[in-house]
Length: 205
Length: 281
Image 1 (tube, rainbow over the protein chains, first blue to last red):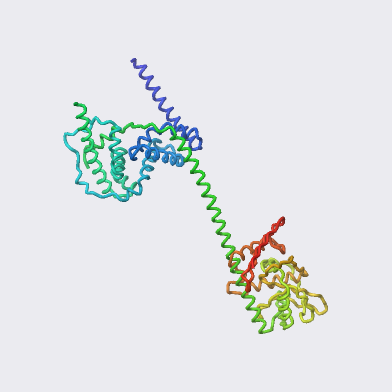
Image 2 (cartoon, rainbow over the protein chains, first blue to last red):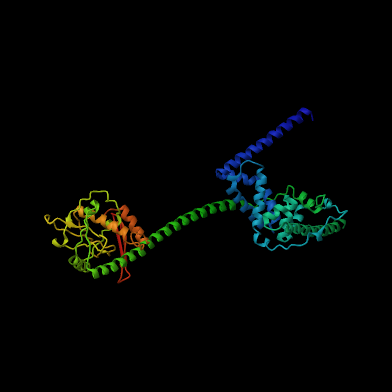
């Protein structure tokens, strides 16, 4: 393409992004004012992704829907406190995570503390990036984990919380958080390898 | 911690990077419903909180009135007995108090006897005004006519209980030259309203005022046992408030408790257009 065309594309894209941002701001303002239409638009923009996040914390689809709905309601209540600082999506994600965790609050008190040394698991020569498992299958693996492992793994590995943050959020010690993470990794790795073994069999047949 | 990012972590993180799930169709509706339910729940909570607070306050006042009232009555009865034993009472003119003159002491055998009689006979509504209007008339005119009690025939419809022989309870020294019929107002602290209509007696203004002064002061000064005009229960407080607000003989709201015999009490609500009177005996 001509450089001129490319430049124009870029300008358009930037304009699009800015206007997207403006649209979002408008919608947020509408939600603050309590307008039903704005709320619905906000929902349609983010529901899919948020449900994807909740699904990782839940055991099944319906629980995930529950978490998502409750979290959205909470978000609409708290939206007055959101002041354009930082990304709205990030703020919304955080509400999703904390709400989802809330569903398991009682169970979290009984997390076992296992020494984290036992589960050093970066196996050499094993490239997980090659895994042929699709997202849905990985989701199933996560949902099968017990709550403690599931939540800590999600928060650390995917959401990117630090052990300190996790400990604070779940009211556990950092040590517990680390050991939960290690154990989760171990289980998942095992299961992935297992499933890959199966799928290897299938593909070779 | 490791230098390289954990491979398990990486695998999952990358896989879920832009992961989305289509929500169910009724999902948004469910959210809307939850929002409206929350709003309603909050409103109910606010209502109940306010209602609870109001009723608690109401109960406190009621308690004050009932208990305090009862105590006053028993105190009165006790003092009446002590007075009977001594058979003496002191009457001082308001004027002399104001002017710092000498206090005249008069024997009151007759007066006491008449008080007894009248108490048995007639029971009319207490002049709550007197008990409760403290000091309001203080600054008004203090022209009290001095009456010599022994000379004046008593028409005892209401009485002032003489609570203490030492401290002046009520007024009255009348000039002999001025032969007026004096109606001494009975001032029971707590009376049970008759089944009949309430008949307040109108006093000559000066005497009425003087009595108010004397009575209110006496209540304030004498009883240091907490029964003076202290509001000890809800009924006390309710009547106190009613007294402050309503200067009529019949308060818009009053509670009276019958001391002694029966554990009876009555409520009365008078709003002008309608009256509610409830009594239990």
